[in-house]
Amino acid sequence: MEMYGVLLMLTVFVSTETQVVHRDVQFTGCSDTEKEYLYGFDGEELYHSDFIRKEGVVTAPDFADPIGFTGFYEGGVAAIEVCKQNLALDIKVYKPTDEQLDPPDASVYSEDDVVLEVENTLICLVTGLFPPPVNVSWTKNNQIVTEDVSLSQYRRNNDGTFNIFSSLKFTPAEGDIYSCTVYHKALESRFITKTWDVDVAVPGVGPAVFCGVGLSLGLLGVAAGTFFLIKGNNCN
Image (cartoon, rainbow, N blue to C red; front, side):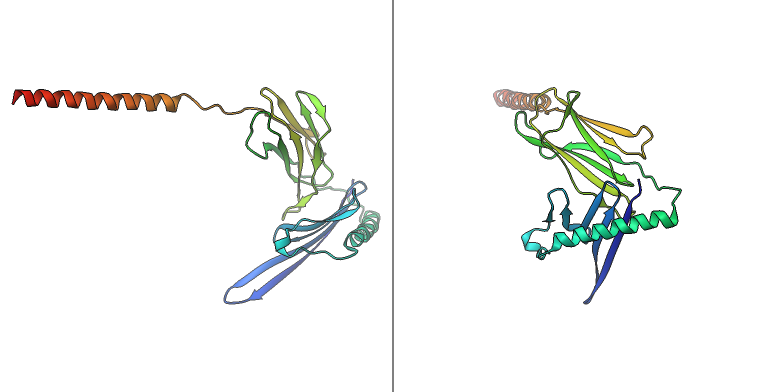
């Protein structure tokens, strides 16, 4: 599997009392199975082409003056075609022998605080991989899950590796166990699996016991003080 990517970066200096640096990024990447076209600014994605739905996706909110114009998606399609031609030419000319391999790491967490029987989302974050592609699969109680599963675009890091995440909509029930398995050729065993179980925290009895004991001791102290005060007055 060969991967070809083109990264264009524009650094902008704004002259004021202090110097401000901004970074504008355009990324085009392709392989025989993967393709990616996106724009970013200061580490945040502004736009990417969804080649499955065949549409452009503007990810910046309205208040951020989102970019876009007629033919934006078609421009991404054309850029991918150029990328494929360059990839074929590079493989023919350079004949690379040593391939950079960076194994990914993965973590699983819930999007919101877990409440039993309330719909939530599990996120499997995969970081530091190179090259794409990577495959992610889910199981619930050792059964493969394919419904309500989504996979994000690749996100490029400054070191050239990529991040990606998969999400799974679920309704937590006590005792359920979920797992996320990541397949990548840089891993020694070709895959890693991270598990996540439904564990809703139940308030402990410790704070209530300590508060009760403290209140009881306080009342006993008041009662004892009152008793000795009365005895002292009687002695006088």
